[in-house]
Image (tube, rainbow, N blue to C red; front, side, top):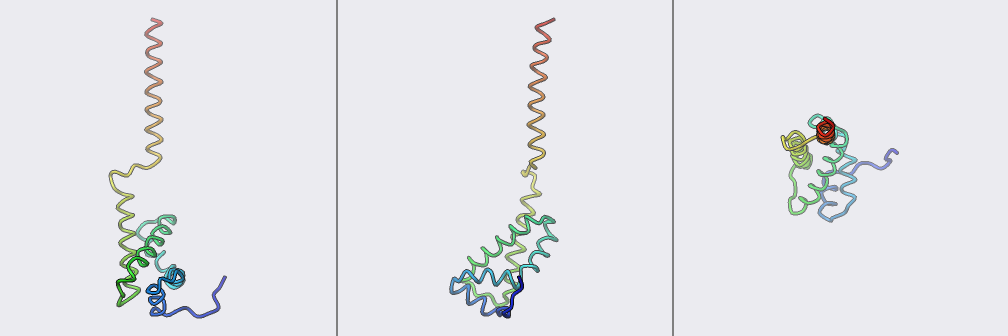
Amino acid sequence: MKRTEPQMTIDEIIEMYWQRDERAIHETDEKYGQFFFRIVYNILHDRLDCEECQNDTYLGVWNAIPPTKPFVFPAFITQIMRRSAINRYKEKTSKKHISSEFTVSMGDLIGAQRHMYRLKRKLKRKI
C-alpha cells in the first residue's frame, strides 16, 4: 500500500522520538528501512537476521533519543545499525556458536555409539 502523504522531515521524526511517540519508529522505517536492510544484508547475508537487526536498531534509537539529540540523524541511526549487525555477525561466527545441524549430528553419533556398545555386550554374552 503506497503512502499518499509526504514523508516526514528528519526534524519531525526526531521530535516524535523526544515526545516518545511510537509512530517515530514507523516513520524511521518508512524513510530508512530499505537502506538499512541493504547495508545489514551486506554484512549478515541472512534475511531473518537482517530483520532482527533492524528491530534492534529501532529499539536502540528509541532508547538513545532522548537524552541524545543527534546532529546528523541518518549517521546516528547507521552507527547503531552497523554496531548491531557486527555484533550479530560476531555472535554467529564465534567458536562457541554450534549450528543446530552439528548438534543433531552429535546427538545421532552418541546414540549410535550407545547402540554399538549394547550390541558388543550382547555378542560377548553369546560367545
